[in-house]
Amino acid sequence: MISPSIRTVTVGLDTRTYDILIGDGLIDRAGAEIQARLPGIRVAIVTDENVAAAGHLARLQASLDEAGIGHAALILPAGEKTKSFDHLQQTVGAILDARLERGDAVVALGGGVIGDLAGFAAGIVRRGMQFIQIPTSLLAQVDSSVGGKTGINTAQGKNLVGVFHQPRLVLADTSALDTLSEREFRAGYAEVAKYGLIDKPDFFAWLEANWRDIFSGGSARSEAIAASCQAKADVVARDEYETGNRALLNLGHTFGHALEAATGYDSARLVHGEGVAIGMALAHRFSARLNQASPDDAIRVETHLKAVGLPTTLADVPGGLPDAEKLLAFIAQDKKVSRGALTFILTHGIGQSFIARDVPASEVLAFLQDALAGR
Ligand SMILES: NC(=O)c1ccc[n+]([C@@H]2O[C@H](COP(=O)([O-])OP(=O)(O)OC[C@H]3O[C@@H](n4cnc5c(N)ncnc54)[C@H](O)[C@@H]3O)[C@@H](O)[C@H]2O)c1
Ligand SMILES: O=C(O)C(=O)C[C@@H](O)[C@H](O)[C@H](O)COP(=O)(O)O
Ligand SMILES: [Zn+2]
Image 1 (cartoon, rainbow, N blue to C red):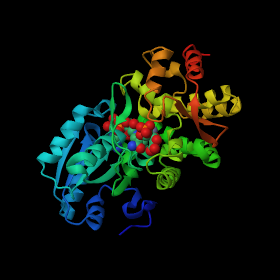
Image 2: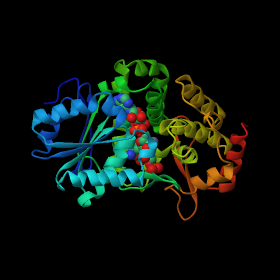
Image 3: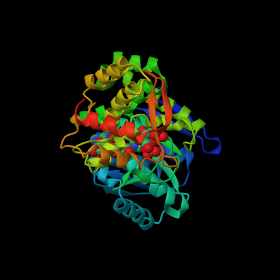
């Protein structure tokens, strides 16, 4: 069934092993791909207004009809604020109203917001339903659809409520990216660059040379998506529940998540990938300040992120930020905090990240004060 133009990356998790299929036109083949793996199921599609308006919902529904798969759909507002208790309740209600059984599937058709929310609902309705990811943003295709982290935000911080719940299948239709805005494509690129900065210096150098081809939809685009999925699959297969090195995937997120919370999850001001871009630039600068890395590496990271049009400093966040103490309070809610001690992903250089436990809050505070003052 799988054509040669479709790439497959496998996430190896014993009996819960699943495939990520990457290629053009997969939404139109979704019905057949689902029927082949989960015969006889019905599905609840969860999507958002932008994705539906771009025609992807209709394509998916037509494909499900063709395969004889019964379906219901819930269309939610677009944007980070949708990852909320209110929308979780609405999603759970819609799945139950559609009378889906435990063996039926929730299908997330959209970006990471829809994937995280719908995945959480799938993880808790009837104590765990089947879950299928059809990611339509670059960020979701390279990161959020893989690995089983699901959840919602609260006023206290990002992703503070959720469950691990792996999908049974990921269908990354690269043609869906043609309707994505440039801003959102750029934001997703931050997570692509992240894999290079974590432990793949050659991949980062390749991105520096090839990012234009990735942005213009050339062959480098699907290559970058597959490489990113492979990088994430390798980490998840070794450490599904983040008891160790999976935390490296959080590079840039300790600062980035605090910024998202501090801006009230207002997607007009800051989206996740932009927060991650600023967070990665800060993590490299903070590492240099703590004499862990050369300042030249921090400059190299910032130069590349700026070249693609991503924000890299606190001053790049429109509308102003709270003071350093308040930002530190959000950081103190991070899920990597252990017995009160802050954990950061720091680096010894490009592709040499490491988990730093017990980072003194006083160092973080002084760094944030300087960063807010533009020093
Ligand atoms: N679970 C994980 O492992 C993981 C990993 C990374 C990020 N995340 C989460 O993912 C979220 C960010 O994901 P995102 O950047 O995809 O945001 P998103 O879901 O808000 O999507 C970005 C925007 O693009 C629109 N969109 C998506 N696909 C489209 C398409 N094909 N055509 C037109 N418009 C389209 C959406 O409507 C939205 O406005 C954050 O909440 C973040 O915390 C989770
Ligand atoms: O999958 C992971 O593990 C990641 O950390 C990937 C991140 O890009 C993603 O944003 C994730 O949701 C952050 O995880 P969290 O545990 O800090 O909420
Ligand atoms: Zn992320």
